Length: 104
Image 1 (tube, helix red, strand yellow):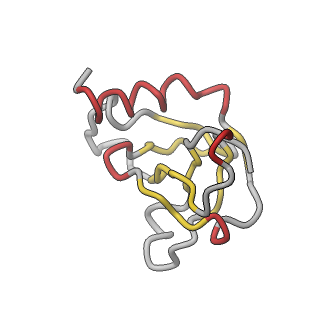
Image 2 (image 1 turned 30 degrees about the vertical axis):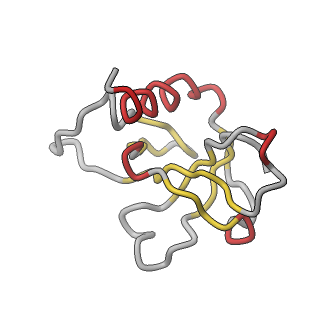
């Protein structure tokens, strides 16, 4: 599993509104049994969200909001096969984590 791989949300109860999660953990930490992941949520166009904290990420043609403030470790074994990789959008994810950690 690689950094910025996208997986189907392993939580069935939350998967309707949050269909995917993206691994943001660096590959150097792959020996750990968990992966830091950020939820990718569906929002309608009328919903206002702070884009610095919740940037738009495109996965399989769908526009989703990354919820940096909900990033959390997930068991690596719960993440099966990646459905996409969003390394091209990494700067938006890193900036969102910067907003969570340092407020910038």
